[in-house]
Length: 420
Image (cartoon, rainbow, N blue to C red; front, side, top):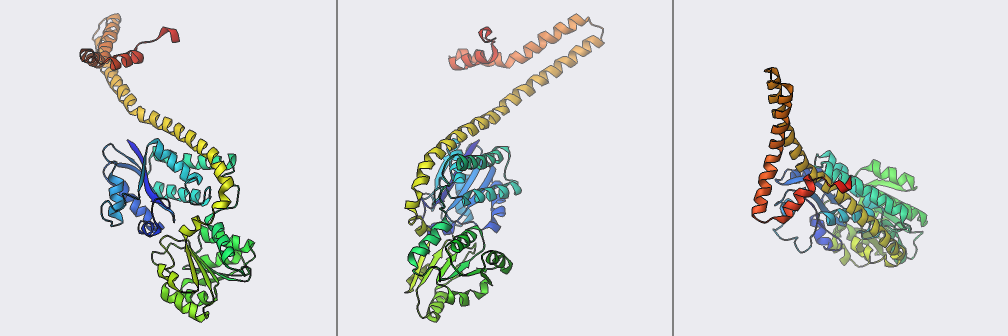
């Protein structure tokens, strides 16, 4: 059985391609069941965020390409379209990759904490879909422990850096009158909540939260003394917004070039800063063509946070050691449970022989035979049955000169008195 981790992320694929393979949360369970049902796929989990789409699978020998083929089919892509952008890790490398992802070592913002929550969500979805067995269930549980240990034993998460923090910092750098600016947040998920918190800490006074579900917008806006609106009221709110930060799970842009142009006209072309943190994008790419609108995407964030990462990079070396050791321990456990198959088969065969011989020994006793004779029959016959297959195989090994098998058999079956 092979453990696989494959996917693409902000380091290997451009935003336009990541949009094509972003998996909406409401579709994840159905996709998991489809993937898990494929021949050779024994376990599966999907991690899909704004920066990555990844498949974690445990597959039978010969089925290593099944997940990649499914990925192309599911997203209706030409076979091979993703090949130059995909990475694939096997066994211990796959384990190490998941541990690095959960710890934030593979994130755009090194050590950012949100990814751990996203990995936990992926785990729960996979478990609820019945796509996990003991091996990958333990793998994901272990990833949570590794992330917790890395954050508690190193300074990987010491400085307040996240995509949301970087977004607000970028807005501060670009917009001169930040505290008095009107801010429009679109969405109500974790990223937007973090943006709201950082904006409030930065002293922003006018905050509007727009969301498809008004109750969710109101719950977030109330915590930061802002105003909540429904997504259908977005065009009017856009007129008053100097800063727009968006992160929803919408499949199509919520701000088109037409909507943005109309708002810009009503604003009399006062400059507007827009930051799109969503994948797929919430703000149409051609909005950037409008004069007086400064549009940034999630990929631009990665280029704006380097200097804040120095202390985390130093801590990352320590975290990498924790990840490597944990991956080694997990693979030891996995090899042990994989080894249970042959052990159980050998034990079952031995028990079958025992039961057959014991039944015949009971028959001898019931027929009036001497107990000593019955015991001798049991011991002699059971010994012959247990050793018949190994003896035949070892004779064949000796004939073909297989010295390795002969030495291994001696280690397995011959007691070493020096170790007693």
